[in-house]
Image 1 (spheres, rainbow over the protein chains, first blue to last red):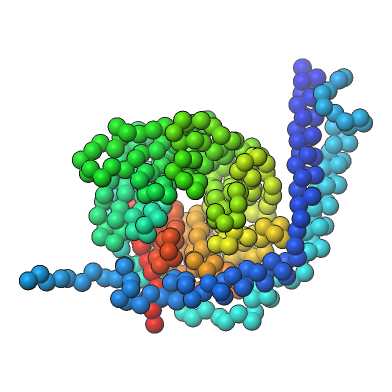
Image 2 (image 1 turned 30 degrees about the vertical axis):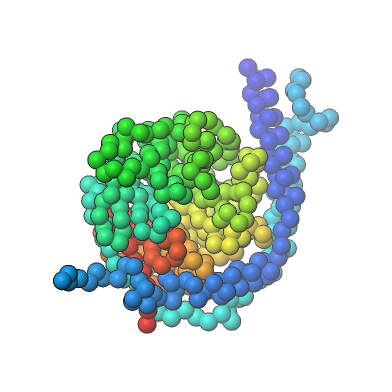
Amino acid sequence: MSNNNASSNLVVAQRVVKQLRFEASVRRIKVSQAAVDLKNYCLQNAHQDHLLMGVPSNDNPFRPPKSCSLF
Amino acid sequence: MACQGLASGETLKSLKAESETLRKKLEEERKKLHDVELEKVAEKAEALGELNMKTRRTLKGHGNKVLCMDWCKDKRRIVSSSQDGKVIVWDAFTTNKEHAVTMPTTWVMACAYAPSGCAIACGGLDNKCSVYPLSLDKDENLAAKKKSVAMHTNYLSGCTFTNSDMQILTSSGDGTSALWDVESGQLLQSFHGHSADVLTLDLAPSETGNTFVSGGSDKKANVWDLRSGQNVQSFDTHDSDINCVKYYPSGDAFASASDDSTCRLFDLRADREVSIYSKDSIIFGAASVDFSLSGRLLFAGYNDYTINVWDVLKGTRVAILFGHENRVSSLRVSPDGTAFCSGSWDNTLRVRHEREG
């Protein structure tokens, strides 16, 4: 009984160490670099962002429906 | 006592000591690279003007709480699912209901539109994810063509098609996420690592490769490699359940919404949290988040019935949106970024956009 507990604890501990070793090997960049890239992406794409800029009324598919007359 | 696979000299004690050392090393590495705050870098960026968001459509028809919603790639159709088991496909332009399915389960917590627009997937307390092909024939009984794809051992919390109608990624209360083949129902890959319910997942934008992020009740957000099943990165700065995760449009970061009433931004290349969106006055949990097309705005739905709109770069709130009469459970920006839709426990969905000028 206690052998089983011990070996499953070991398996868990081995898994944790393996995962941590993997995470420690991940290549990271400085926050300053990452932040500049995030900022540049936002600014470069701002003009296409209609939730930021607004949609001109005639282009807007969600504009309040107008009534049509059929002749 | 013989144990398999142990390197020489490895004991429980030495493994625990090594994991402590590794954790400390990880913390130090991340700290070293933390040379500036995102807000500082964003200081020079122009401040955002006042937003003028208006509700343009209110979709009424669900008889109970709306739990989840998703947009079709055609930017006009929406699928939503509810506590009473109903899944409805709407034309958001006209507010017409195009299809309705009654699931054989309540609490349909997850729903998704297929990339082709020809099918939807949904599931919840039935522990499954089912796919319904959408027929052009309005009279056809959708339930007859239903296909059970995913089987978990606890509730389905999230589902999304990958880049085609052929594969589905699911997250579950059983603590795992899984990738399935739709046609055969075969399990292609499973993802283990969360120590409690997985509540949410999001697939990386297709240009950035084969990864997805998941969030759980264990307060962790994990990034996974779809092919290998490997957990490649892990973030654990939240103080409570993570209800929603969404990738930043470039794929280099993701945002999270949590019961700890904050939303946070995690940069994947810096491997750390880089911003936190919170206010002392916001004390209710955040349930759902999504970015605007440029990534500048973060829309977040809360349990206090409001939607807060955050300036992602500066970390400030730029608008509060009212209107829902109960918790906002689900929120998504449309595929072309012109509008966003929110689903609520008040049984309705609202489509909003920004007016020009």
